[in-house]
Image (tube, rainbow, N blue to C red; front, side):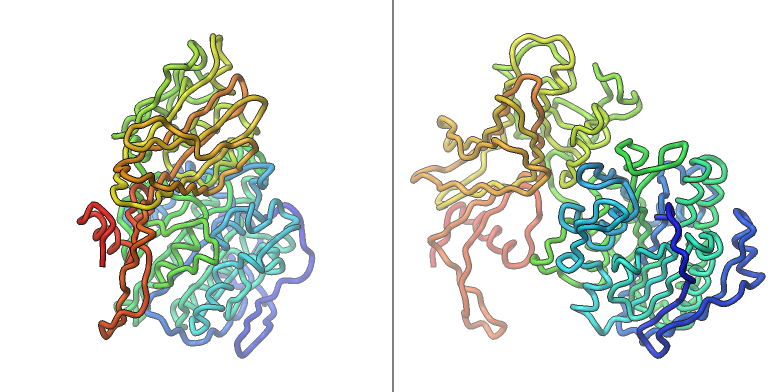
Length: 574
């Protein structure tokens, strides 16, 4: 974002009746809005004309660049705080290099596309490698699947338009040049014109961007002037919220408002690196079905696009490859149940004492075997531990711990590298054991999970399966890096087996680490195929029955299969 100028004159454009509009002279009223931070006046641009909306479900996404969420409480930001009280507010951390810099290009690409940089391809503000053809922004996706929706985008960091990040697919757009003309005035123009559209037109989905918080942080850090910039942007947000409530059709509409940011800042100003302050992001959402006052620990920045689709009643096609989920969707990940038992540092020195983020206590039904584990070492990492991103990634920067993006909330980690930072004897050898899962009458069992694994030297990482408490057998080994990816292991169920448990065994000696999260076990009856009935009741097709345990709740027919299998305790028969 705002780090380099783009000298061309700003324009407002739309895909409707008028295709290009010039930015006009400043007006006194909008100039007054901007004077809190600068004498630059707000430009007054004619609002683009949108097609008439078709949906009662409507979404406004507000992007505030470089807004560190831990500074909101100190700012005069009543509208953000009201949304926190009446909506769901989830904070999280970004990646860092080599996946991507904590810069605006990758950040807004992650927000718009709903996937991480290893998919959308934007790693810095050059946008080299962008893969929007495969992973388009949510407005472009809506133009494909719901072209009847009326969509609008307004930005004053021009690459969000010229690179196709945000505005692609919008029916109308307002594109200004904050680098050339100043962000305070153009932010105010965006607020003015979006307010007018909300009051006098009928949009369905809007994305608006405010950039001055980032500019102020670059210029003077995250102190008083930064708090003032937050206050101005909060006032812009308040005007948009008031405009929504003033709509004559508001009582019959279902509005969702989402606020998000692309990255944080160091205290002195600046970003792009791997510090916690630069990696800070948040999603704040208020609308139908979104819990008031919720503070989930499992949100990620990729969840913005998924939430937009959810609130519009759109089920994403698995082929879209989204990494996000709706902010209101909670999982039954057993590791996240450990949140109340997380404690502060023991031997680590670089983690603030106030950060409560690890425990050795396994969730119910799980266990850790440390019989072969060496003695001593850093206490937090002696054997498999359960930790949060903020705690674990603080241990040592720039060793790819920041790349653990597909884990959420609390995850399991075995880290021989950090354990070895204190005197010890013997090697690192620890095994994480799942509960036993019922596989009675099943043909196969599948283990799904997310892993982040870094290989070095003679370390080993093996997954073992034990049926009916018998000798565990290796079903997968890792010998090379796997950077935060979903994994799946299928294992045949031996004849007569009634239960299975899985083990994750890691050995090493000052090597790297292994992260496990989102464990799900699914037992299948491959030999039995239940009829699927058409609306009239006649059977038309068949599918395999599944019985799933763990994370990722099932829906629809899969849920019905799970219930049926649970009732029978075996593979049903026709």
